[in-house]
Length: 594
Image (cartoon, rainbow, N blue to C red; front, side):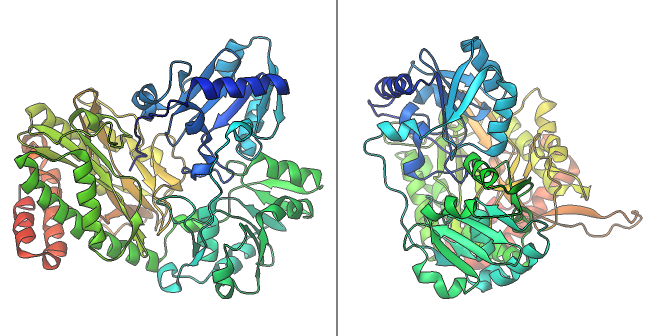
């Protein structure tokens, strides 16, 4: 899955707001102000109140930032957003290719004599600010109140939805056991937790503070005794007091900084996700600040047996909806008259019919023809395009169920695909199969596996500008760290980690192709004649047929062909008993051997 986008249409974004923030910068004696796409919890998704980068610039991507100067405003975006940023921001903003160009390289070129660089200490991590201080020695870094908030007159209110308990039958481990397990391994007197999904996992709670992701916005302090101080908005925990129990003390958000100031001894923070203000407060209180990994990160990523069983159930349920949708699409699309919005509404309708859908897991990406080449496309009334014959349709979607989170992409041929489209699709599919089939030693990270997915494309002189896979939560964030499959994923994969497997290929102005299954890391089965080295492999969670019309069988090896036939056979066996006769007939054809 990839964060989708729509073209901004607000006449107020861009020049007027940029002028207002520059005027305020001049009043405050600030030469540079940073506006990140972040909130105080450093999650990928933000509530409307925290969408400062989008409010200022119009850019709605899930990563990036703006550096505002008196004469230039650079919008730093990575390879996923090169097309999107051009569609969304005014000419007053300058797109900067990032991370190829770092702020520490770009800024001195704009202001050779340095100056005062201001930032909101809630919105930048400890490691980020430390890196800027080291690399921007010619600039004075100062923390200030957020300047965007000062000019955003109708800024939305903070989320206020109550938290809920996540039942033991779905969590698989009581929160008192989790707290005891993590605190026993804690070498420090306390650990500060700032990531909502970490707190949600630790305390077996969920929330509705971020659209599509059932996370509670909160801060927490885990003490060596196993006791937890939880900081949340007023009244948000009222309904879960019995669930939290006596060892979890609830405080108002405003008490977080004063409580940090009262801590003593060694305190653990994760410098990659912890707001800079937390470290500053702890140091001023005389604490010995220890930088390490959030203690919830790895335990949360390694799903227990209950969570894996829940994921399997959720994916089977979701696959029924997907197959009903694909059968419907094959009937309706050739008639003409469908648009991208029609497709999105239909798919969500099939998921709703499961009577188990809590929410979709992200805004559905549905790109017809050239729109499919925009990796982060989200249809709007302005961009809505007909689903036309002899084009490809890319649909990336997912559901949030109480027992699991799903994420699936299928690319469908509407009409007759070209030989070029079939060749590109098959190479993408070959890459997905390579990752699905691999066995690898313990200690291997996603960066070692990423090339497997790209190799068939590389051999044809092609590639894609996004990672191959991301971690996925258990009725939590559809994007979950620390695991991943990409050139930057150094974290060793472990049994229980759920990941996406989604290579793609995009021809700007023509078509886009992406195929995505979710997979879970497992201990690899024994092989005759192998040594005693511990190995891992992947089991597939997603069972929805690939579009056989797009597969060029002549490009496949015998092993790849056998894998597809076995996958389709397993798909039919799993889903056919759950389908009506008409959809069963469609599935029989879709899963026929190559």
